[in-house]
Length: 231
Length: 239
View 1 (cartoon, rainbow over the protein chains, first blue to last red):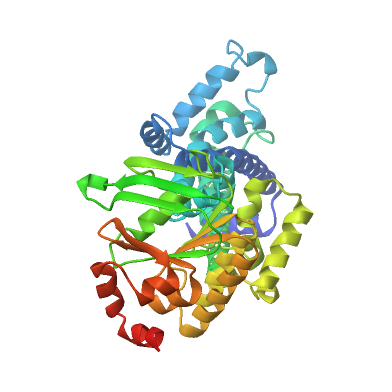
View 2: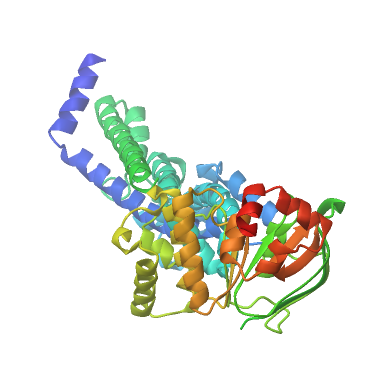
């Protein structure tokens, strides 16, 4: 156990090529996923929070339920769309980082949108009358609320980042865990553990935990700073 | 001018009468102050005038239209400020106007200068004092160049010094050509600042009169009793 730990630390401290490649791809996939999911999820969540339309309650319940969407289910659905016989099969995206980003975006959008809806709806209760008195349109209200809640929404984006980095089922199915091409931290950990290469698994696990801790620490201090600066 | 006409307004949420049979025309320049005891319906009346609340019965027209026009601005007792700079908050009401960035900036800074907050433009709005927050809320409304400004107890939570500053600004906004309707609990303030008084009690307009006449010779028993409740101001007026 101690030897395994020491070997894992050695892999990380010596910036092992294999570890670096896997971590780098994981970051790229997570960054692309979170960027896309944020661009879709933030306005979507804010719109559901602010707009009045028939079925709004059902949409809210659906978004909340989708937060717990099983990643393997999403993986299978995206697989069906991208496989040779699927509607997007001709694009040849299956077993590529793009496919992984697509699957993870499907997973992360509901998470960011549902958290955004809750945060923005709470703010909307406070601001609604004031905004209406300023003749704000729906677009003005959504933009102003997203801006005002920006520091709280970091939590939603962070949750999305965490889900993207730690997700294994969907990326395994649509990415195929191809070494040097679609192998990310989570799929590598699953594979190497099964193969008995525990030092590599542990090394990747340590990187994953460190990244998540650093992100959360950053978000915590950002909120503290925002509280001091903006009240 | 931006005349508002309310006819036979009734507002009865959950069967509870808040306003009933309210007829009111705001059709001359100046400052109208709505006074009355707690629960008289002052704030609801103001919100109906702003188009923020729909009456259950009766008719209201804004400058001849059945829908509230963008010439109206409202300042609340506890204005909500975004987690942002004073400058950003002051210019917030200009967003729907579609002004150029330069024009919006010019108008915002000009208004901040007029309310004495230009030097704090980059500070966080939420860290302002109560009086400064209310001045910022006034600036936000003033920057919109409203034809009608509705103020809901704008000095209720302020000390006398901050109240004095806000009253000065309200007069200045009126001088700028904006029609003002405000509510207050402060009879002294009503006397100092208003051109005419609307006295509201139990959801009805009991009396409307020019300020000097209202305080010197109130016509209704309710108004007389209400004024007597503020004895020092009564004495001050008689003197």
